[in-house]
Length: 379
Image 1 (cartoon, rainbow, N blue to C red):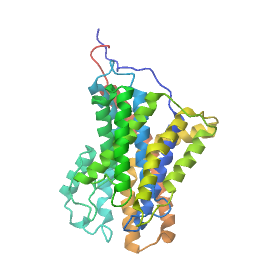
Image 2 (image 1 turned 135 degrees about the vertical axis):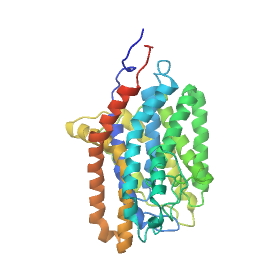
Image 3 (image 1 turned 180 degrees about the horizontal axis):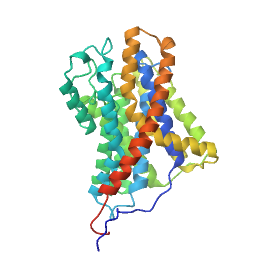
């Protein structure tokens, strides 16, 4: 029997609090990136939001949990190719938007912050933009002195590793028993702890460059959180607390805003703090978010809105952060002078993210699902 209908799966309820927490983390990432222009070397201490980069590790925990929830019971009715198509349809439209925005903004950032931008030929920028649209990392040095694997939209590096995590799950890890998965996650956790405590800067910061060392950091940052999140789902345990969304949001913000520990003399102390956050605190937040009730129109509405804009906001904001950094550097502003512009950029990114979600992302994904998630035979 043949059918032209898309392969259908039972509709599952959303974890509204987890959606909201993803949005909270995305907002903190935007704030962290805006304050990055004031980072102090040699330990790259960012004012007020020093551990904002750990939001990426929190995203990975969420992703692993949600992947298990969404797909663990579909195998047998869904092929590896079906899974890949679904993930590309979910993520890639906004990845393309982020790369194109990065290309459109690129030359406006020329100046003291990025002195070599004006020397980059248009054809090279367009090739890098095409690579960004396809999420292909590059070593093209078009944004010196930085060496990001996605130089038009730096945060796309985490989406690159997200795809790696998805492929590892679909090809191999989905077949792991709970016992094997526990061993795998434990080994990944030991690697994370070893890297963080023993690193030259006492942190897990990194993964955004296409070098052997940076790629290794990215993989270590992916493996424990992503597959730890999958393990959390499979264990089936939840934590129920009153006011779950608001309390979890406060705890998450406290972790990300916490100042750096140890200074230059005790680097291991900061690495230990980050390890504890990733290994234990983030999983506990996810368990509480998944197990707690959400009541009231305000809480539900806030979680829905934050969940909807979280990915668009994350993937489009950084090209505007480049411009903000370039402007601040050109005028030698401190944060006391730049905070109104900082707020304007942040709010503007939220508005743009919502606009792209409703006018582009959702319609495009609906068309792609209708066009490509079709099967010649019913399963």
